Image 1 (cartoon, rainbow, N blue to C red):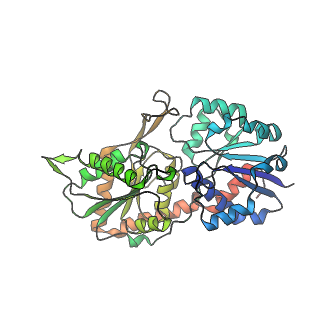
Image 2 (image 1 turned 180 degrees about the vertical axis):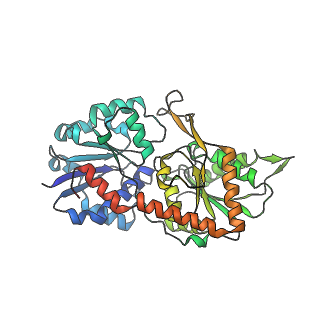
Image 3 (image 1 turned 120 degrees about the vertical axis):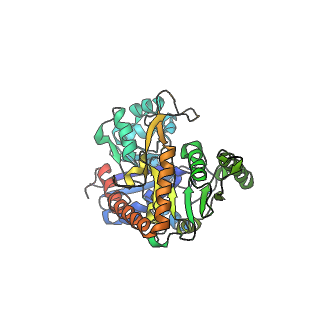
Length: 399
């Protein structure tokens, strides 16, 4: 019997949800033709941004499986699996009632990213009413769902595929200057308030160290790029000025690239780096950390969080960290009920120093560790074939 699968997500958006959805579709497309007798796969884009951020290649792939929203009810039946790759709040909309009435709660899948160690109470309530299955991207989030009492066989760990980042020679790391690359959205959860002071502190007197930052704020939703970059510059300066020595500031140079850029520029920034570092307070899969691994650069990251799936336990650059109460503003978060990862500031400095000393004495040791990380990740996690087979298993299709 052919299994119908309907995938609904932000396929055209620039957001994390949009990028994740496009990468899953590209991954599935590599193998779906081999299972055309087993699975009937359709896509319905539900975008929040007016601009379409798909590449021409991505658009061609989406069109292969495209189903107009008006055709949903004629496509689905009581056996159709429906994947909703959207924020769980959408389930409050009566729009979904008709779909759930046809396919049944047992065939509803929520695919979502979440960072703290507990879910918002109203999400749990919505899920218990409307969804039986969950697609998560890392073991950290999987454990979060299990802690809420959701059945183990209903929480499907399907890692996030990674595209469009070039794998480089690990020995091509920057040997002219110790260039620490960091990339993520500019918000409190990414740990900029730890990273910038730690780098400025540890390498206060150095003229051979640079911190390169690629970030963005609200450019994707129409905020003026110059205004957004100025806000980031002001925040960086404030953080750098926290580290002083008898009235003097750190010698560390900070290079900033802000806004939405082509993936080729990001590949170039990885190529120009010596190491990657992000003391994130938790990512549900850590896309940029995965990209660092693919780029064959050592990643200096917390010992806890969703990105841990990329690394073996003996990795020497995992920074001591612990779960601490969540102090993130917003209706979804709770200081009382939730914890986020907090990186140990002094151990971050120690791991940065360890990497610097390797870079000075024997850069090939950094390259060797980067290669080891790469081999582990592509074998265990960032493996498109394994990702697709996990998707098939979740859909109840034999591989």
